[in-house]
Image (cartoon, rainbow, N blue to C red; front, side, top):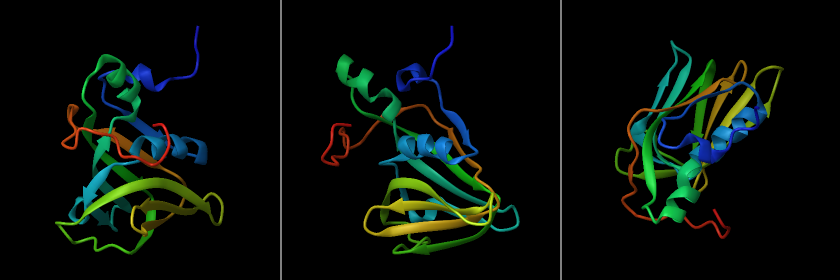
Length: 161
């Protein structure tokens, strides 16, 4: 019997996902919401046509189980890559700033000449990064074991996460 995957199915296993369309990208966007990073944790590699981020990702897939079991909120180091990037632009951030903490709000796709367009990473505080892509290919890969979130809490967006 097969069914849709659920957040709870992930358990402690590291996530490895790739988005090839807008629906897949919404899943990755939900998983990286509230991730934090420094400007220096972004790397644009034009020859490889890759934009990469090293995120401290909130483990949304484990929040319900953690709360039910009385466990602390966890984060995990995650590499997020946007492949096939032809160009990158940013606004409202200094990508070389090693001190400023940035927080990811969402990732979205704005279609252009099919199948290409722009992958937009929206950050808290009116910051954004836009990668012009040939087609959607965004990968998420957890690279460490989960660890207790230093703040010990989930960011409050005025809803029930």
